[in-house]
Amino acid sequence: CTEIYFLSLHGAPPICQFVDGDDYLVQTAYEHCRDIVRYHQPDILTFNYVKNRQTDTPPYELPTPISGTAYMSNHNLHGSACSYIFRSSIRGTLQFTPGIVYGEDEEFTPQLFLRAERISYKWEQQKKFC
Image (cartoon, rainbow, N blue to C red; front, side):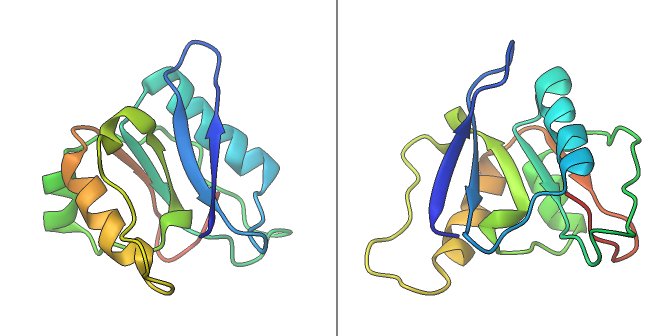
């Protein structure tokens, strides 16, 4: 993921998501993710990718937030920075290490997740949504 987009949601603190030029945001699923961020304000909302954007239907239930430590203790962490939206304030001074061309998000992502007090996640049996 090479670019940062800061999304300004009415009534919510600034959030950040990393997006590459080849990423595709499924509108209805992504709007649901934005609603979770807007109304429930997790530090991080993590989600899977879409396998088939024409046929996959995301679940619309509200995930229960857990701490970053609990998340990392009980889930596999996908290092890709394209698979989550985060509250920009939790980043603090955390940055990508200069000079790393590939895999830079694999260093950044776990450190960010450990800083989070409230992570909501949208996962369901290897189906991929947002």
